Image: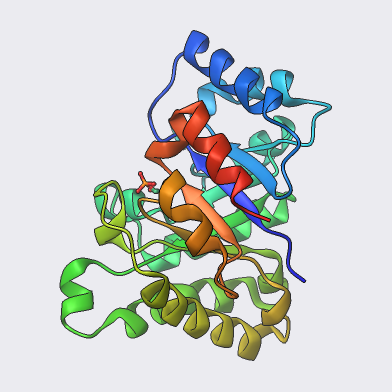
Length: 246
Ligand code: PGA
């Protein structure tokens, strides 16, 4: 049986005092029956690592460079994330795809760079509302995932996938369990065909997961946990979501 995973995506939120308070609350809320991680702004990784070290809570970044090192001003390499003890990094979040023009190929290169340094990429895929309305959901998520599978080749089974319909992110509009399940089944079949390990791989759902809908979503057989944005900034909400995963 797959173990559930709940990942908080803080996005560009936080401050030293607020982070300290939030992480202390998450530590105090243990034990959780699921694996729990927070993906924090990179500038806070060292402090997060110092706070969570020795606990079973994990941490990660929200993005990583596709390059090893070099003249890439402002970028952060997978080796640097590994040095900060990152277990995970998000790659291809829809906000990066939309606001930073990240292509499927770049997302795949980032996932590969992360894995090469032992940092598990959480590869985000998802359709826009226009794509869903046009009946393209399946084609879009398959295309996004296929780019990564092809690039990672025999290592593809080591990634985590997060299905995040763009129309559900930060909108308060959650995909119904049926809508999420339908896409998770497509992704799992694709992973199984490509890696032979699809049944063992973790596929998260993200997009307006809240304490009041988390348990229903996580109860679906193919949903292995969540990627949580807004609700991961409120300790009580995030703890409630983590507890809903088991
Ligand atoms: P949300 O964000 O939970 O605020 O909808 C999810 C995400 O962007 O990962």
